Amino acid sequence: MSQRITKLNKLIQNHLGEIFQRELSLKPGVFLTISKVDTTPDVRYTRVSISVFPYKESNYALKTIGKEKFAIQGALNRKLAIKPLPRLVFQIDSTEEKADEIEKILLQI
Image (cartoon, rainbow, N blue to C red; front, side):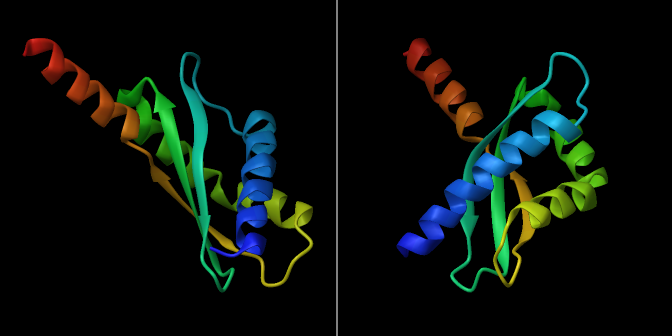
């Protein structure tokens, strides 16, 4: 991965964190973290992996982001001074859920 893409990923992650805090309204007790940002080399798409606590609320969080996706995309576009502007694709990061399953299995052994 090029240094430009790495810097862009970090920049997008920081901006999205700010945007989520200001503009994303989740129900009380649901917390969202941007765990990974991966931009394609041609800068056309950015895959944003989010982790949700509690994990069972992941579908709710993804639907809420989907409803507000255009506002989130617009806010990010205003902050980035690049061409082309990457289109955001959101997905759930299930790493923590898998780690919990492995931990439960190890405790049973």
